[in-house]
Amino acid sequence: MHNSKLFKVLSTLGEVEWIEFREHLKANTQQKSIVLSLYHYIFKRRHKLDSKKLAMSEVRTQISGYRSEKYIRNLMSQLYNHLEEYLILNEFRLQKEDQKLYLFNALNKRGLYHLANNYASKLRSQWGDTKMKDHKNYRRLLQLSHAHYLSNNPIKNVKKVDLLSELFKSYNSYAEVMLKFYSFLFANEKKITDISKIEDEILDFNTHFNVDSETNLLNTIINLRLLLTEDNNAFNYLFEELCSDSHYYSDELAKIVYIKCRVYVTKQVASQNAQFSEKLLAIYEVGIQRGYILFNGRMSVLQFYNIFSTACGLGKVNWAKNYLIKYINLVPAESVSYIKLFSTAELHFVGYSYFKAIEILNQVQLVDINLKSIQRFMLLCSFFVTHDSYSFIDAQINNYNQFFYYNKTKLSNSYLEASLNLGRIIRLLVTKTDEEETLHQINNTKHLVFRLRLPTIIEQRKIYAKKMGLNY
Image 1 (cartoon, rainbow, N blue to C red):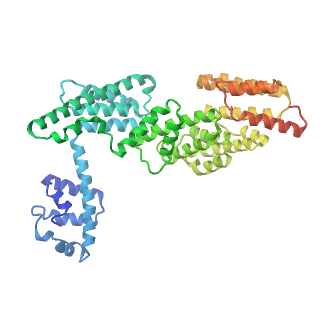
Image 2: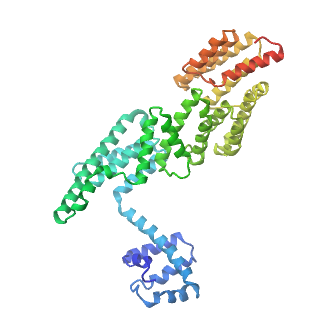
Image 3: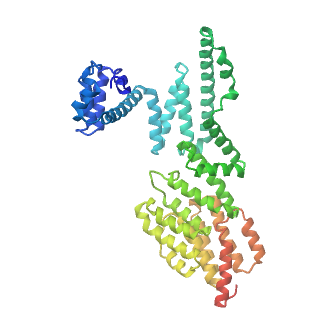
């Protein structure tokens, strides 16, 4: 026992630390813990750790009643883990300035953005004070700017360029100061020691990225940059990494890779590249399972339903049904019943049971304007398929348009335009506009909801009309 790492660390503790560690153990173990008993036994002999009373044979007798040496070593290992934890907490307690950075992160992650922003301004003023000759402040400023910019803080909506500028300034300052500082350390070492053998290696920056882990990280970042140019090879590289269990991103990098891959594949699907459908659903699955799109383990009603509706729109009905069963409990409990009902309506809609879809859509009570919009999309398309009266469809289109004009302040300009364009397309269809011209407009209209669904809806109208002996 005398030569164990546990005793080596214990021998460095001061009297106050011995007592503090005892209190730490009490707070983190059960009252009758054998680990705590072992520490009490050692504590009484702390002033003479080389005592024979602390020999393995003696401790086995006193603590465990002749239990095996392996048992005692296991207790020592557990005690050492607690000791490591105490040392970490004790060291953190001493780093007063670094604690401020953690406080900023805590405020920011909890959505207390006003408090976080005010505190960040205070820290920038304090750590940026030129009278403070502390090179660590440059590192703290860099970490602060990094965390601020890469968070969900809404300040980015109005000060994105300012934050990014602050991030670059912090990085450049930190890099310059530390390069000068390390160059001094190197020059100083050369002054007193002959280290010519390693000089070339240190100065040759081209050899810096020889480690596989660093090379892989660089490849990830390089492909993120390429993905901004819609590079499909870069997407495939990042997608495979993202879905692989053998790559372990930091939380921050993982979310960036996830978001950029999702944006890219969503664009491809929206451009009617059907081969990307499976990858989009796979990315959604990864986002849920790894928590990238969850907040405190939950999902917003709109986000949950958008994923479900996207799967339905892509014709992946079985995936949508499994998703509904598997993840419905991620939404707030008070929303579960109406989301299930609304989802059932959409399943009838994509299953071509339009009358049943209309019945349920007219029953479900929705609050969110985006969900209400989807409700209107499905109702209008269902009416188009199942009704032959122009005056009826015309009235429905007018009511539809009136809804969106009334709520236009709640919608983005592009979403409003896309919604109104669906009404325009339906009007073209019921007025017997040339079908090729209508399909051309469907494919080329910049903003249009239900774009991918419209060809199927048109085909279903033809089938229904033929079945009922109606005019197409």
